[in-house]
Amino acid sequence: MPVAIFLLAIILTLYFYHLLPAEVAYHFEDGAPDRWLNRVAILAWLVIPQFVLVLFALGITAVATILSVRFQIAENTLIKKLLSIMGNMVALPQIILAFAMLDIFLYNAYQIHLVPLWVFALLVMVLGGIVLGISLIQSIRQFRGTPGKSL
Image (cartoon, rainbow, N blue to C red; front, side):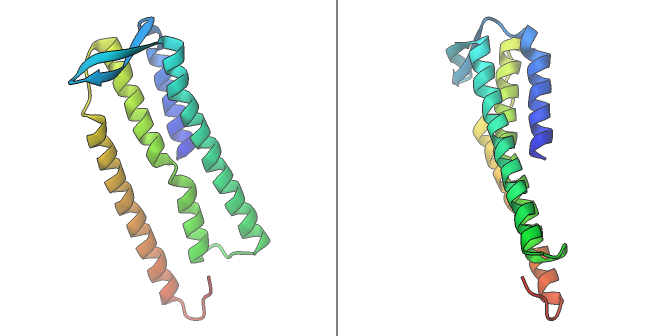
């Protein structure tokens, strides 16, 4: 999922690049711009964190894979499921960054705003917490339902 969100951010950047002015508004006070950066700098500040988060997610996945092979963790164990969830948790901040990027691009290209960033971030965090909670509950139920099973 982190790689997919990163690719979406790259596609957004490629689509909007030619529509952006030389000076891009990136901070807004009551819906009006009050801080600007040049187009290349704002793209770097929006894309580089996405790339770092993808590297972080790939690192988590690589460590989880190495550990599962080294300690011979069975495919259906609770730990294996939790490790797979951990690699995808990086997608939550990526989604928020991608939304901020889209909002900045839309304002500078078409002078429209989406919902406030804090509303979107809260929604993503609540939904992410619900999905994580459901996944954990399912994993624990499966673990408890199998007699003699170890972590």
